[in-house]
Structure formats: C-alpha cells, structure tokens
Image (cartoon, rainbow, N blue to C red; front, side, top):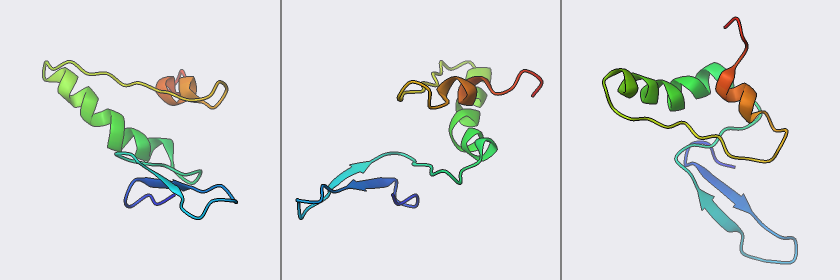
Length: 76
C-alpha cells in the first residue's frame, strides 16, 4: 500500500506481475478517525451546508467497523 499515491499492490506468490488498484485515498491501520473525517467527510458536509447534495458511502466486509466509522460514539 502506498498512501501518497493511493495505490494498493496485490501479488500472488506464483505470479511475477502484481495487480495495482488506485483509489482517491487509502488508509492503513495507523490512520486516525479524525484525520480520515477531515479529509473525506468534512468537505462533503460543508457542501451539504452550502445546499449541494452529498453522499458518504462505507463499503466493506461485515464486522470491519463501517458503522462505527460513519456514526462514531454517541457523545462525540
């Protein structure tokens, strides 16, 4: 994973050439929720306040923390 380029490389042991997937952003296990919010969700929220439509969509395997990431903690 290369956070600076948004790329993830996956290579099977028996293959010479890895598959490359490019995203707008990638985050590893060291990423903090506040930083992810500031980079991804905050601009969408600001646009909604300005009258534009906005969608924040979390996709991934069951049990990986999507709901917590979107909703946070009740008192936050």
